[in-house]
Image (cartoon, rainbow, N blue to C red; front, side, top):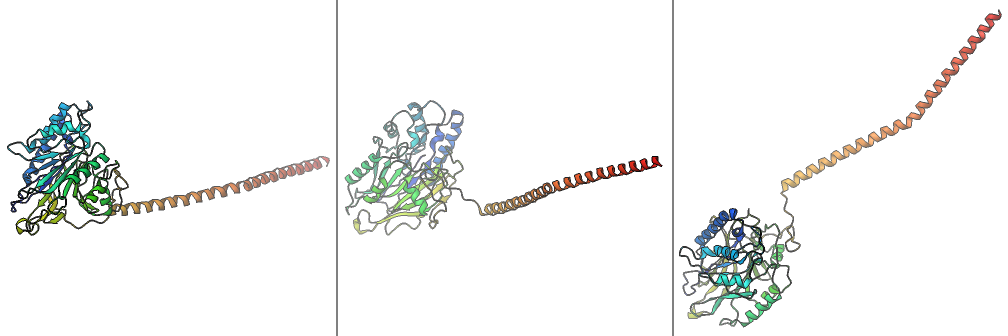
Length: 435
């Protein structure tokens, strides 16, 4: 799955508003069997090109799963030459046909089942035109958005490599030490930050269960969050620096929600590879603005963060740093995700990668109820008929001995009568001979 972040950064030019374009791309289609991969690769790259044309981004973040470690069959792990070829293909829309869009990359779980370490792949990535990727010893790295006048960091981007199954305490230790060592702004506070992590944190599930989200939760595995034990989110809350966490991994989810004051935003699946191919494709867009006197009127989308004068007010002009977000689909449509918060879901997610039961339409519920009642009524009639039949059989059996006895008595009486008649006839015959 791929994330893009696109950035237009000219903070001295207030007429031009910086923004990010973030999308999740299932780049696994880049590693299918040769007969199938060509058409899918072309389709996926075309989707990426259309999204770049819609938003004209200035910075892109590839958020993991640039390749797939299991498609295309053996060999396992995938050889490095095969990996680098597919990797370059995924990055190619950033620097083809005269385009030079800066980008940075983090690792996804499917990028690990190949030859070479994470640093090997990130070093290879860093060699492409426009790449800001930094090898990080399989932990993470940070990028800064710097004001062109004061040279102070206006916003930072923490790029986490979440590993095959999730992050560990070493990632938390890296974040805490890195954040503590970064210079604050003129107010002595750290610049606000966005964090990009391929596998979502468990707090995404908490936000969903609480109903504090906008968008869609339709992945077959619910929220397939990290199962490793670490305190990264608690560190985010403690340091009061990271304002938005963006993740991918779950192809059917695109919601943005809030938990303990931090916005949690899924990317949007891009490309035709992987599972959940019926989901709408596209990109999540982050618009980061530093306009005067608040946000520009034409900015739409869900407001995720706002801060007045993040680096003071040089020249006596007040500025407001805002972060808006929306979804851009591959056909050009937009979902601003600015609707009211949804009600808490009827079914709660019980754990990572455990989907809730699917909602049943009410007409189907009514039909199912009627059918059940008819079945119960039919069974009741069958039971009554069976009971009546058993009673009839029982009555017949109890009446049979009396009938047999009556027949025997009648047979006995008839025999005695015949013997009596024979005796009388014999007596009469004897009297006749005597006469």
